[in-house]
View (tube, rainbow, N blue to C red):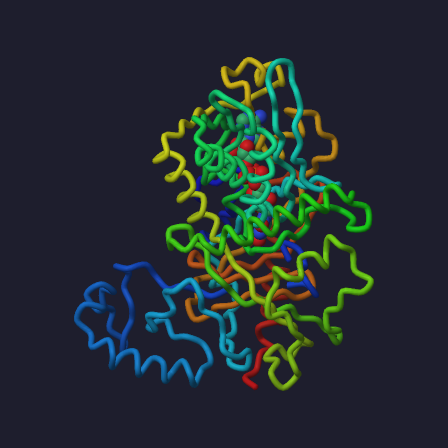
Length: 435
Ligand SMILES: Cc1cc2nc3c(=O)[nH]c(=O)nc-3n(C[C@H](O)[C@H](O)[C@H](O)COP(=O)(O)OP(=O)(O)OC[C@H]3O[C@@H](n4cnc5c(N)ncnc54)[C@H](O)[C@@H]3O)c2cc1C
């Protein structure tokens, strides 16, 4: 059994079968919008159709009652109309609802291979015979985050002075955002791709806005790469903020980064430019006082960010691409000779891990990640990151992650890891107390 995910696999065990995408600023994101219009909601134990409910209920009375509850709990109730908004940050950490972690709440486990490139992503122009190739691949654990940003860098490199149609290789988040930017610039675009969503790595991503695990060693990246990285991060950060149509699945969420040892306040001194350059993109970063820290397992810091729900984002991007007249051709390119033979003489290479074989890039390596989902908990509107585990609350489930296995090409679910991650998350959320 299992959903048709490729570059990804769903476990079948017992019919039930995640940075931070790394470990973010001190490291560590999830407001939860509630079900779509038309979904059933429970009110006083009675299931009502949401549209009918909103039409007939006395909204003023309901919202007064709900906001009273919200004030008491510090989080918004699923009944609060404001919980449908893309902004739902907790008022205080004290009353955060814990995630309920147990094996019988598992709904699926998926595996994906992050397209890791040791020196960081490659956005570069290359002449291959009479064809101009602009590379845009190797985003590791930060491709959803950086997508619009490196799409901007790549299209700026390729499209200036170009006339004629454009090809994009790959239909993950990088190919789709690059294709959309080329369309917006007035070009006719064809995507050639081996696989379509939902069968891409991009569909597997957790979707937290943070460019984590994008390069190996912060002290070894070049100044030129640092410039590209920070420019891409800033552009994408601002672009996602104005992506307010709910169909993109983008919203603000608060991240709690938890540590067993005290957390020092963030200071610019002694940090590399590539890390400290992200500080302005992580607002409201502060260390919690112990009396406002509900995670009794250790110390906590918070910062605000966004989450992009990949299945929604990719669907919306494909729809936009098609509405703008884009063409998709199902085809795997097997060699640079095949790339040169395409009728388009401007080609954007957005093949992710596929670039390793297609363009002989030895720096590309899979970074395997496995995510286990629990039954959704709409009242959980935050993300938590602790040691090597993380939790994001999404519409399609509570996502538990935290595996980064370099060089591992396996898409099979590892049940031992499922159990270990469940245990670690149970310990984290089991430690929570109101303060
Ligand atoms: C477990 C996990 C959690 C993650 N969490 C986050 C997160 O929270 N935030 C974040 O920003 N990122 C996250 N990521 C990283 C993110 O998923 C990737 O960086 C991103 O998906 C890369 O996008 P892409 O378009 O380059 O690759 P892909 O989505 O793999 O797309 C590549 C496309 O190229 C096609 N292709 C490949 N080879 C060829 C070929 N030869 N010819 C034609 N087509 C080809 C493929 O079929 C596919 O359509 C996570 C990843 C994993 C695995």
